[in-house]
Each structure stands twice: as structure tokens, then as C-alpha cells.
Image (tube, rainbow, N blue to C red):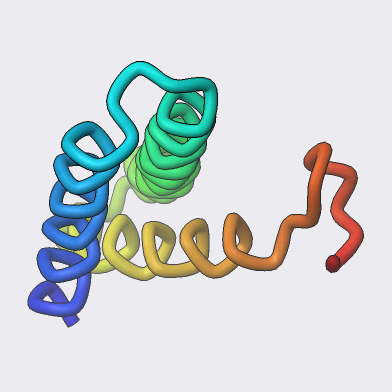
Length: 95
């Protein structure tokens, strides 16, 4: 599971480098770079929120939350899945 997330993050970095070299400062390059950044930021924020919610719930219940890392990994995968399914304009409709 962690290996897939690492590969996904590496793919985003590689795509960003390819985009910068191939498209440069053109409008297409700017758009593609922004889409990559938005996707990565959304996924990280979503996963952090899920993990924090899990941690705080367990802490409130008096239970140690050793599973926070696995909750974060699962939420990160879920977030990338959501980002993939979002259509243009982030309306939630599939294109």
C-alpha cells in the first residue's frame, strides 16, 4: 500500500517536470501544472483531515491511535480516486 502512494507521488513529480520542460510558460503548461498541484494539494489535505479526525476521535475515547498512518494512507488513496472522478469545474459530474 505505501509503495503505491510513493509511486503515485513520484508520477506527479515526473509529470510536473515533463510539463515544465515540454510546455514551459505557455497557457497549456500553466494549466497543466496547476491541475497537478491542485490534485496533489487536495489529496494531501483530504487525507490529513481524515487522519486527524480519526486521531482526535480515538484520543477522546481514551484509545491510543497507532493506526493513524494507515488511515492517512487509505484516505490519500481515496482522495486521489475522488480527484480522478471529478469533472471539469469541480462540479462533481463525470466528464
